[in-house]
Image 1 (cartoon, rainbow over the protein chains, first blue to last red):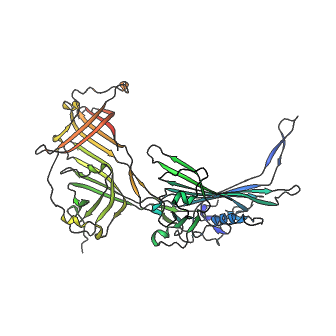
Image 2 (image 1 turned 90 degrees about the vertical axis):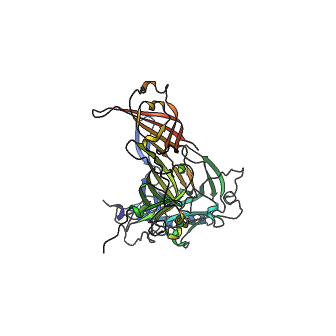
Length: 275
Length: 275
């Protein structure tokens, strides 16, 4: 048996600080039934193998291959090319994957966590194996693990009190199959969506056509930014390895108010952007 | 060379700028919130900052003079300093922005009345630079007006206790606080009190003609009453502390009889302190 510290969790050639990785592979066997016969005649494959890989991990601001792929996919909409899948390896099992969803969660005084899920069409290869010594994990020795999120326009984050933050990205892939070929000829990127949810102590109402994120958050037409820094920032204010998410193009589309016994009245506001 | 030691005559507790007299015990606990950094492919471990920073102090005091803690069961915050003397700020152990989280007072025949408190400080705690200690402490009084409320100078407004001899009572007030943190800051921007505060008053008495209650009468017959306890100076009967609680509900009673003693009853009332 291979213990967790002997496994690799590699995304596109880079080791990530995964706390959980799970891979589910399935084929598309469907029972074939016929009138006049009891039970199924046989099971027949309807399409290619698929795999779903889920990763939960600590976000490193200086080493975040999943967010780089998010940026690559967002930019890919401007190109007229076939997207190349990326290689991911978990415990010796490797495959070519398409990023399906990505999320970041931040709460005050907590380590920022991230999650990514990937789709594979055509199956995976390899066998359980101990890790490759050439992969370096935790390069910053914890200094650049995400710990602080600022949602700011002017730099004064205290003016814009935020109780929690979530970023979600999701995209839709469609494998194109043709008669006469077992493997798909192409996997098409159909659409993508970004969603940011922030929890506030003040209420933001919705307008019919949805205001810009900057107008809702900062009462300003300027484009705000979400900045993520590691622990190093707390002591040295070093911003060299920050991650940034621009609020440009986001519009408010949901406002949820909640309160319960022993809790406070809060407002969760969601902003979306579509590709 | 003999190693030094610090004994009680070199320990003085100041609440804001005045010394608190009759202190029996002080225990301080600084929590450095951490989480272990473990990940798939783990090579070397470390601990990361994860969680709110809280300094916890537990302080008990014989009521030999005014009760300085009772007034802090509300919204007020205070600082505390343990000093070698009012003129020596070196080697202090202190806290800033403390909130009372629990207050209890216990009175029994054969013992001095004792107040016990727990205090959470959310801004800072530990050894402070001498410049952070308020200079006004140097002007504080080193003596105090002795006011002792022995059990014989306590009055309780419950008729049953005119004939059934109360041997002890204790009051407990739980003052839950909620520090509100925002993204980007490890200090709370507000401390909210989580009203209502739970209050418990428990009496123990030796039975004479106490008739008691029957379980099946509950809930049609309930004992809900206002409770008032006055502590008076035993020398001149002047009032120096009053505890008044409205709508206290009897929630339990216990009957105890042993071969070596008299019949004892213990009854507990509970209620709330509202905002």
